[in-house]
Length: 262
Image (tube, rainbow, N blue to C red):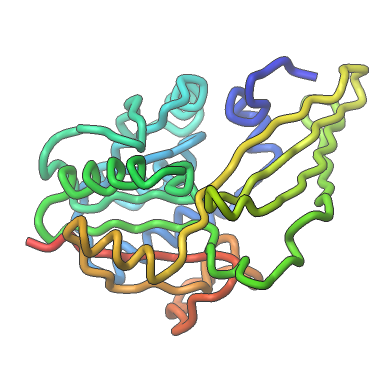
């Protein structure tokens, strides 16, 4: 098995093999949301990962800056998903220019790698500084409210398998809630048929609740335009063109659209 501090993050091609998105569903959802709420052309995709979504937004005619902390992800994005400007930035705190963007996009629970209140404050302060007056923050993430009394995603390992470059990989992922830290912790064990020993990796997402998120956004000068659970690129069933936002916010995913107040 490929040696890595984080198997997927440090091996972007493997990441795309594990999470294929041939129809660019996440990028199409983001573009539809930006058009629905009248965003201007300058977009920052923070936590861009392999760069697929940023490249889709670029192809839709937007001027896109794709930012990530992972050098491996950025190198892969430049080679395989060209078009946007690619820069290294930490979502806990970044400065890519005051009023430089009409929208900030943050997909696939990247926002939830802000584990502490200080990190959340740093992220939202950076977003507000980066946005022109009236600019949009669009985010997609897991929903903390879903885990209030629900256990169907917890405890029991979820097993997935796929083949990449002739090697069969298998992942066993277990989630549990750390209530004191307000984190959803993930333990993932990787095995492969190339004779390499298993690799165990741990990560976590902050569990944010809808009303908590509304408060944080208001404190940082944002007006929430939409906050809903479905449909979206990772919901079941997934979002399709023309689908309006729901009026509920208790499903597994949470979708946010907020406007920077002048």
